Image (cartoon, rainbow, N blue to C red; front, top):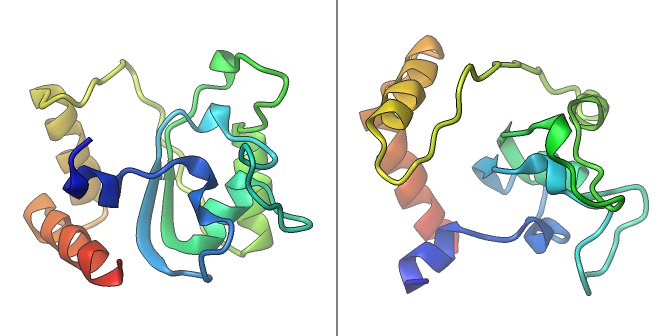
Length: 139
């Protein structure tokens, strides 16, 4: 992984000690694999990885498939995300994907992401540099 990618791609256990709303946006792919605590990471009483992601960011995006859990340790579920979001008084917007998108530069993925952002009144050209540059300044 390149140094630049290492700044943007983190494991789900990376947010144990992150301050509240430290990040503008956190995107969690494979959220059904979230755990009570990360391997060899300290745990904060009353928090799990879902809690930590929601607490650490102004906007949390979870890509989840409740049918893809592979371990009894996997706690990530739509129900768990809704419960933890409610604790923080967060608005929840659920979007059901009709097919799988694989990023890898897929035109379908980029079009889907652009349509989601446009529905929120945001143009992709506005948000991607904003997230990119603010993330670099934070680290």
